[in-house]
Image (cartoon, rainbow, N blue to C red; front, top):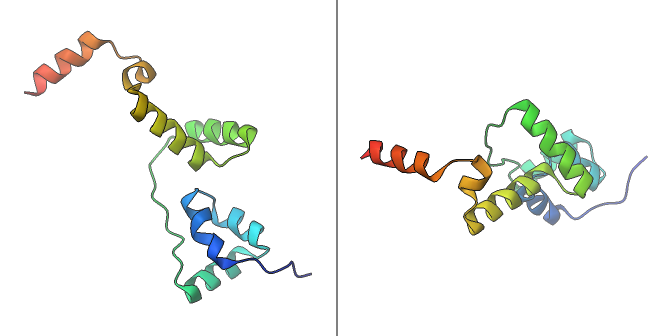
Length: 108
């Protein structure tokens, strides 16, 4: 049973949004193998930038992302952008300003 054809031009956007090969293949109506072959033929990279995250943390992130109707990668990017934009590093990491000052001083 063949699904309707999808536009391969969507693949780079889905990769950038953090969707897995399986998720992209499902959206395209293809198998993962077909996705990889088509991407190779079209010179579309499926390589993603990665950050090592403990499994338990990734599981929680994926669960929350599903609840929000997005991917874990998109959610992680939004969290990091918000933390950086709003200067929330100390609040998120629960660091005391005095602790940060002594660390910065000892590094010089």
